[in-house]
Length: 496
Image 1: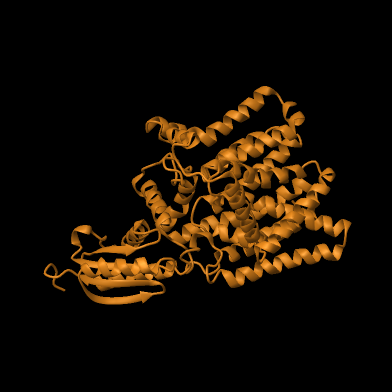
Image 2 (image 1 turned 120 degrees about the vertical axis):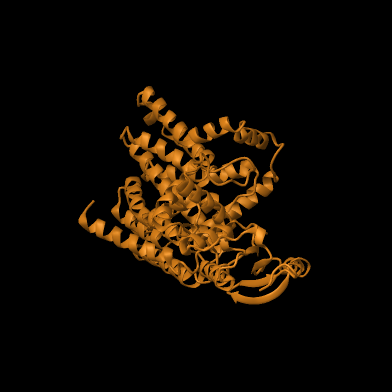
């Protein structure tokens, strides 16, 4: 890498870190799922209670891998459990991925111009920025997918040991998102048939060795967990495959919903204003790449990367989830970068440059207008007003008002009544300031934290009238953003 390239990519990484951490920690989303994850991370660091599995998936009995937990242990240890520091750590990983995007783009096209275009588009991509702000494991798919395909292309070009690197990275992708194991395996199968002659030219023992590495890194921990827990994961997957478990939709409905989610994800990744424009742009990209597929033997890899996962999701007939489309981020950015260069070289140079600048402008506009309101951010789509600063202020207010007295709390959360996020924040604040932890045995002094429910205000109102009003006499009430904190004392059980 030349000194000039190093300086440019370092500058993009710094700029990307700023874009991804903008308005943090105020706008950091720390909900119930994040609380559950951080309680596990806390158990690993503090209690040395290690785990073979990660967060649960949407399928009962099936889990993601623990790579997110163990990586999070590093910033968790040095920050004493600060969620903001952990978030910055993962944002740093996403920002440094610009180097991987550059190397992958160059290996794919052997064009530094395309590599620079892809690197800048990744830096400002609203979708990539949005995904990197999720405090969860799925965004790790972005750097891991870039690394996987980088190793894959280098292997196809003759670097034997790059296949072992691809095998390891494949396993790690499955640890970040369990469905990646199926989606990337399907992509790998298409790559095998497309580049069969190159692949089989390598010694069979080496191919088998690499295959075993992929199995160990992808399924080793799951197999051990399964053996220890009466084959819970295997039984759950078999029940799902046999149709005795899970929810299925019709093939036609699956086609429609998967396509809609693909367009929606592409709209965010490319920073386009609506689905109509995105549909036109996506199919123009497909058409131009198809017409020029003979110009580069690795362009089919982009097709497999983008379209095979969609085909698999259609066949599965489960509702497509947005987090599964994190796998496509780099592929879509590479595709549009190649098309921009084709337009620039073979049609009108000014038009290619204009399209590139327009995409940068659109993404930056979305960043400027949407991030402050948490608009088009997946985790916060139903609760854009939940902000980390308001949560910490609520916890601080409760401790200040309790003034050393023992207490308990109840919270209204989305999803409903899942208190793990608040339980962790109380633990973090108490440990940091050597305060007592909330104790259910001392609920005579009760603090109620009510998050504004925009999606179902009637349900919240009924819950408040029929439940909260019975928890004691209201003493104090204060609002932080969309959080209302009430102090209540049960009659005859506590004297203030």
